[in-house]
Length: 501
Picture 1 (cartoon, rainbow, N blue to C red):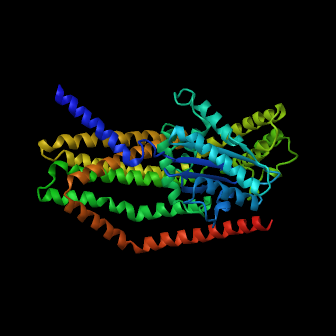
Picture 2: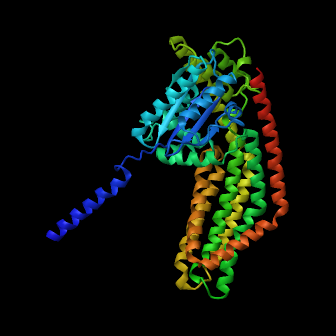
Picture 3: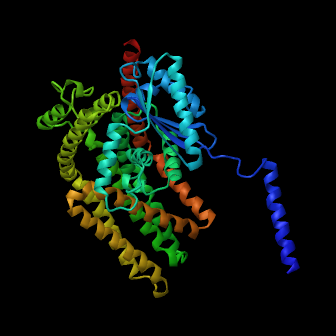
């Protein structure tokens, strides 16, 4: 008993002592967070644990134009970064007497730090505007379009337990992640704030400051072509290794890993390519509204015509209507008349989106051949693996059979999904994620199964195959270079026009 007491006492002393060099335990506050500034432009900042801007991104086209070729934001404190963004917004005429409201949304990993971060952001917006002799109003209630999306999401997922207490800030953060194409909104909502912030930090660190929609689409299409010509081929390296190993009586009990991995990896890559291009090309907000839909919106907003609602291409879309409405409603005194306009507009937009959604789902037929090719290739690979499983020695068959059955279940689910075109886009994310999860699982098993020397030899072979694909690499780089030049010229033109206005 005495020994236990002494041990506990020593442990306690050591624990206390460990805090002393840090000038007190728990003092290192995690300042990681997320800040969204909606002025139209819309800009988001990801803050690291030290309170410095780890990532910055223009969420819409005006946001990209605002940030283009601007320094003094990334790597700065959140206070300095916010001041810089507000200053540019005033200088370029985005923030003015006629558009004087800044919608601010803030979230943080640490709930205790959230209030401090929010106060700091609000103070920075005010200080910068005061320096420019502009009176601004800070609105933490979110833009009209954000609130509308949240309401629609809650209606569509009323049976989900997480919806009841879903905050606007959490929804905004999850929405930003989903719009990058990394995961679906439904998946993002179920993640914790710290996971979402880390994901956004990683994404923002890789995004180019000239990444307008046209560039992103060109990049996804070019990547799909390159992957089909080059990357798919590299997945066979693991199958080849195991085939050669079996011939020398090595890795017999794990010989199935290469073929199963290749099947999942190839199907995941092809599905991801379809998903990236299809979803990006079919964003609901990019579809021009019909004359009837436009008339409903014009009536809801009590406009004389649709001219104020048009985007740079002269089209009226859900996105262009929301941009107009966000600016109108945030700069108006909210009364019963304005609230009625909001409700009528929300009804008009919801009706328009439901019609557009049906058209988007119908466009699944455009990708039907590509999806069929994915399933056919996976099915052929499955049958090959199944045939091998029947001829291997009995003592090695159990693990092989389990993997084959799992593979068959996945492929049968893909076939069933492909027949239901109306749920094409609803299920695309989940099925792609499922393939990727299995791909990663089997690659992990391969890495554990091989010696370091064997693993390195396979990787060297893969690198050699990629190095040989010079023609495809040049085509890919040429496509990106052209898209980049066009995007930069477009942004620079818009930025110069803003400064001269």
